[in-house]
Length: 395
Image (cartoon, rainbow, N blue to C red):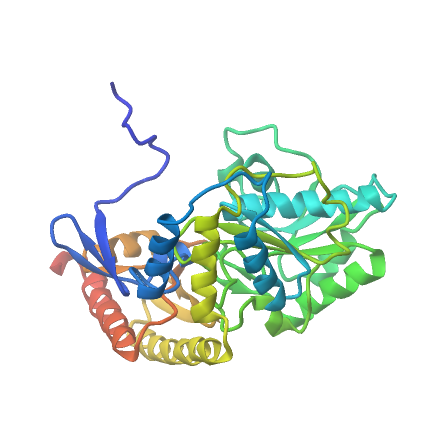
């Protein structure tokens, strides 16, 4: 049989972790890596965090899953906590970011149906975005590499330039239902939106009776130094998709909405077999225990500033490879003058994990509880790797 037991849809590398501790991963042959990828912004407390691990262990021994046909004291408590720490009035729990975005799409469209405007189906999204791998979420993005082989796409999405308010306004028609946007594009190259753009989208929605949906799957849950990134723009969305760091490594997501926006989401309109299971709720609560306080969030901002400063100093020593640093909090990107994927592969062999992205950017997504010692280790290792990479014949 030619095909591998694991369906070969990932270009899996030779890094094969079997254990994690704090910001480090360990391989099956004793290798050690400093993990500044965090499972692509998922392991926000690092690996084997004692509070998160204990919460999951305790819940496994109590109750892992029941049907959503029954009452959920665990889900009710966690949903209320998320609402108390955000704009939202209600939450639908999912298993992933893509499912959260799917729920957001359905919420936006159903709102207009029950509001007496069923013709309003079109959602304006932004170029170079990434919203997931389902048929709806690849249709919501303009990337050909996501579309290839899966046409026909689902109709009802209009793509415009990211951070271009004039283009967004010009795209509004009688059929427009709302916007979906990442406040900080992740896969697109760690591109934070401007204040003017985000505030402008909010104003356009208010003026035209549209809903503003935010995809904070990657930039949410303390990653940028506030619990959700929208807080730094002085606005509130109508709907928000969350996942990745929400469970600290346990697979879960959530679609948050205001009561007004969710008025179409009634019994029978949506569902999930596993979404909101007690085990996921325990993981989410444990993560919030650690990150949902001002001291921790301020620490993320301060750590991000120290990491940014150290990286800016370092890249000045390698002008042929690095161009600039961008991002918010501990969601950072290093703009490169060479192929970031090749360099990321090179770094793995030197014990450092990062992630490539679009726009020639290497993503730096460390656990949010790293220390200055880890920053020094990362920056020093990056600098030494760049020296050798500058002269690959000497490697």
